[in-house]
Image (tube, rainbow, N blue to C red; front, side, top):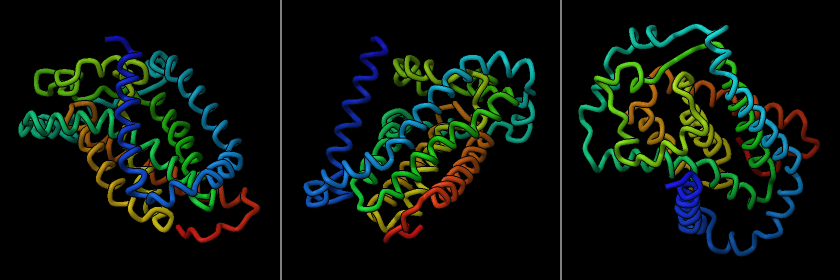
Length: 273
């Protein structure tokens, strides 16, 4: 199986999840009458979306060189993290069952992709462009701020640091996932957990803008929590990585709100964070 076929599989599943969840969250009438709002919001936030694209490009370049740079200027914090946590991750895996592993593998790959894209879709259909704008800025801040610890710290995940105790459950369940993770991750950049930070960002935004999509909040919270647990259950991240990811998410959302409010010339409308 090639990377393209894996990406196609993820895209099909995520689109199917959108087809099911969009009418349930926004409502059939909301989807039918949303084309005008979508176009207006797309035009309004176009510069912010371009900024996110630039950030993703910079993030990719820095990450490609970041491993070598980390070994030059960074500190290896893996033994410290292990000393703090001990065998928590291996103990978590001790209760693993095939159905649970399948669930966490699914949410780590497919649920994560859906969680990042779906709020962009529902906020693009909202009357006010503020939720969409804040979401794009918060995503950008996650990637930008997350680069700092990736360069300053060398951190191996549990499955790499103690492979005799922690199994790579994701790859044993779905080996093709390595084609995806190999494009965005390195073994030394697990701190903080970007999966957790972006998932938590979506959950925080769902709460802040709950009046825009009240049905989205419980689903976003469930998926975000599942993704955070999956990173540990699958042996990819430590608890420390997850907690740092949550802190990064909270900071990105708060800073994103302030930046958008400062730069906006229009009132925030009916959406109250």
